[in-house]
Image 1 (cartoon, rainbow, N blue to C red):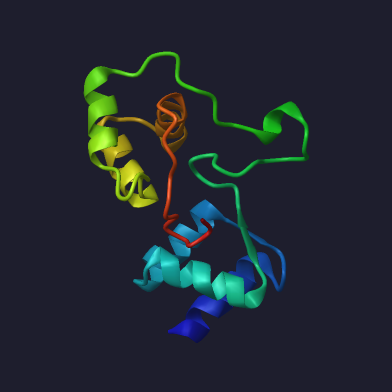
Image 2 (cartoon, helix red, strand yellow):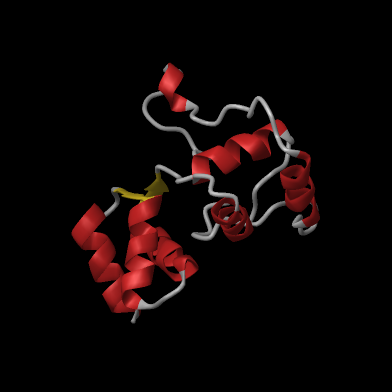
Amino acid sequence: MQKDIAARIKAVAGQGERLPCATAHQIAASLGVSPMQVGEAANELGVRIWACQMGLFGYGQKPSPEYKLVRPAAHVPDELAAELRDALVNGRLPCATAWAIAERHGLSYLEIANVIEALELKVSPCQLGCF
């Protein structure tokens, strides 16, 4: 299976290039493997994951305005804040949990990241093993 993962990554990103987060998740789903397996394979190939779907690593060139996508949400409903805080594991919110909460509340991954930013919470671990 590892060879299949590596072949898919190389087909998309080549050797030592970049692989978008969304594409890494698509590869995992299509092969029936965990996102972490794709992240580990990418790391072994020297391929960097980028374009986090939650905007947790930058886009574009530093220090351009579009580099940082995440902005603190102006308003966070109390029930959403409580749900996020209750989901913390060792003081951090797992990425997969953030995604699940976003989906339950009809929010995009970037929108939930903005809420997380407003609450000053940290996301970890990444589903792909990036952080």
